[in-house]
Length: 304
Image (cartoon, rainbow, N blue to C red; front, side, top):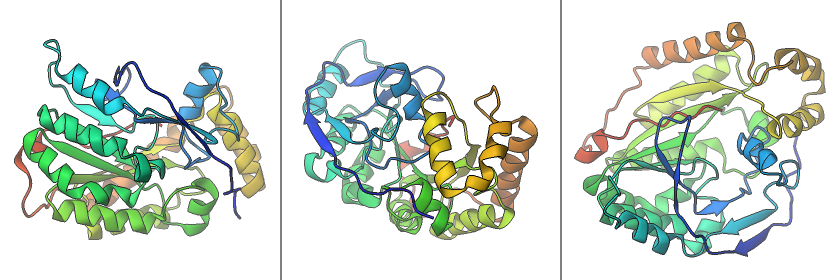
């Protein structure tokens, strides 16, 4: 049960005119994306909806062309220096993983962290990549100056589900090891179990496995979202579902008939189960030496 993991990727080095993006409908006001496009190519990626609306490739070709904003750190420093900037929280990675493989070469996320720290701006990071550990020292410094909150997306530890739905990502347990190192360094780091896939990753034992592992790794918080499928995302996910779980296609057609999310009676029990598990396993901020300003940024919850 494998989804196609091979693809030729083209990296386009293109300067940007602006770095900070005003965000609506999210629990934060500003986002920053050093790259556009993502080689992780998760079958459920909600960004495909944005690409669809922008009339850009949102299907199998998504992730084959990555825009590298080579001057983003310089533009960011200029924007942060404006008298009008109020030092609000900036989230890196809301529309593309800031630690996808290109970051190993270009180091744009690293440079943006330094710029935000220099301006004492609180920042949040959302990622599925253990590459973030490379910047451990810089993140610790940023946590002291302005505050840092990291969220690792870990929807499942089921290897078959991971391989079929997150074809370009690092194994989930590698992310947990990276989470442990961040927490031990004093950085508030949480787990986002999103998205949970009905009939695929929502069994009680699957949910419990993630929460237990998150507790063992020292996660400061945990939250969950059930799959959402909007145009662009829907077509690609359903094709991937037909390839890996053809027996579930009819059920998904019913669950998502004329709606982008499953009925509440299907989603609410999953959220409640994770909340109970979080209580049972006593998921809480247990940092031995929390870095003081990082008490301000909260765990980042996205609406998948």
